Amino acid sequence: MIKKALIAAAALFALSAHAGYAQLQAPAGFGGTSGNWTYAAAANDKVYGKVVHQAGALTANVGGQAVKMPAAYRLAANAPRIAAAAVYLHPGVRTAVAVAGWLVAAKLVWDEASNTWRQVEDPNNTDGLEWFNGYGQWFSSPASACSSAAANRTRIDGSGMYSWTYVSATTGGLCTHRFTREGDTTSTLVESQLTSRPTVAQGCPAGWTATPAGCLSPAVTQPQFEDELSKAPMPSSVPLELPYPTPLPIEQPSPWINPTPGENPQSQPLRVPTGTPLPIPNTAPQQYRQPYVDIVPAPTPDNPWRVDVKPGETISTNPNPAENPQPDSQDKPAEEQDKSLCEKHPEIAACEKVEVTDKPLPDQPKLYEPKYPDGITGVWNSKLQEIKATPLFNLAPSLLPNVSAGTCPSWKVDLSIDGWTNAGLQDVSPPCWVWDVAKLVIIASALLLARRLIFGG
Image: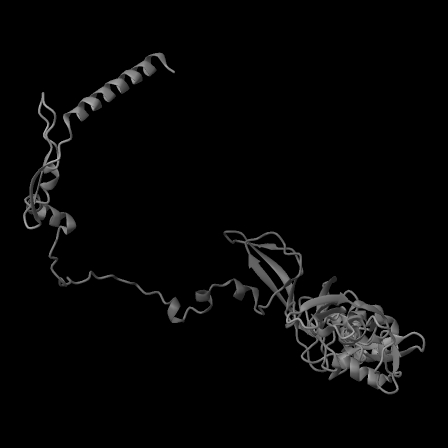
């Protein structure tokens, strides 16, 4: 059956001028039957979540040209259990990164001594150490050792004169005690570090073996192993680390032909140019016609690798051939693709040719009359004379001194402002000698400036 499908596929693809369905050869690692397809992932595959992408999985012969296409598969819900069975039967894969992490999450270990899989659990002593209280006794936890140290210290060291009270202990064995002298109302916090050593684990379940690494169960059977390992989430790269070929079940609608990347792939067509662009006579600008074949995925439940072969041609002004196969979601003849919307559908309303004439708008009534048509400038100009006539406007000139030639200035200020104040005329003239001193300062400054300008320095 497979041989016949290959012969049919070769015949259809070799005759690229004719359309029809073809069945591509199944990729390496793909197997099973309809409704129960499987795929064995290889080390160079890519995994996104539960989807495995296989590069170069499919080969199509288009006019003597071997065209490679990828494929993708979504692992079924029971794939982790099948993977767990493969790990159980091939313990050598336990050192692979993803498989090792998966085993740690499920608390499963390989016992080299007995060549069996076992389950490991933490004992009551969770840190694998025992702690010395300083008085000849070892305890399974820092808290127990610290509490015992306080009791012994009070009994032995204090002789009734001192007391040590346990406060706290860290997982690293740092004790905190409260030291109190008999008769005192105050106490002191004291910290001390316990001594520790590795210990054989205590408190393992019945039938389990106590080891420094924890409690080991009896040898687990394959069903038990599969149950425990499949409970933990399977890392995405585990299928790539399983012994090849380990067939893992895949779910529909996968597999996908020429898929889009990522966790949610979709099959997409692949356009393969089958010749060089040929000039079309009597076209200006010069146009070129290039043939192609569209490989369109058309799978069925029984034939997941069936494709539809659709020859066609493109028409463009580009004389350079498109040599590389390109995905093309358009399944239309070349002429249809090159047409504009109105060339394809001239009957739609958007493509109707309508002559548009524009009429002038009618006169619009005025909505309001402006109170100040000239704006703030007009308001200022109209009110300027009224502002100048106010006493406040004339206040500034009245504050200036009265200077007469031959006499020192007289500075009298009229502080009577209509409506505000009536303080009368006030003389604020400085003494006359002030002006003589100011004159001497100005003359001396002028001489010094003149010297600097002439001689420098």
